Length: 97
Image 1: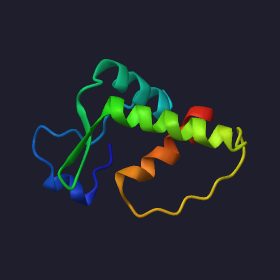
Image 2: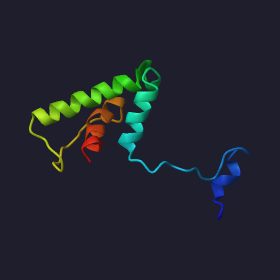
Image 3: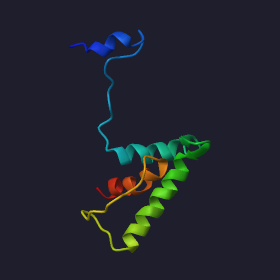
Image 4: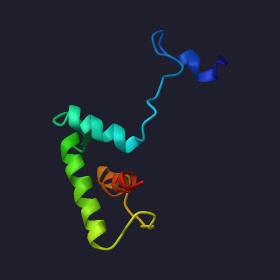
């Protein structure tokens, strides 16, 4: 395997590569929310959101978009700063993919 310049800064027990599951991101998120619903998924400015709370927000956003007539393959613009709320409109698009 070809080493990269940054590998020399890795701790001895950190692998250069890892195996990723061959599942789409939304499936991994749904599995994690089912297995660890009460674990913290996001911590932002002192506020913790669990996987289940984010899942609920994502489903609300998906339902709101569907109620507005948005369907699979439609394009929706998102204008938000880099914050946890940015994930709420993005994950529904993964659910419909």
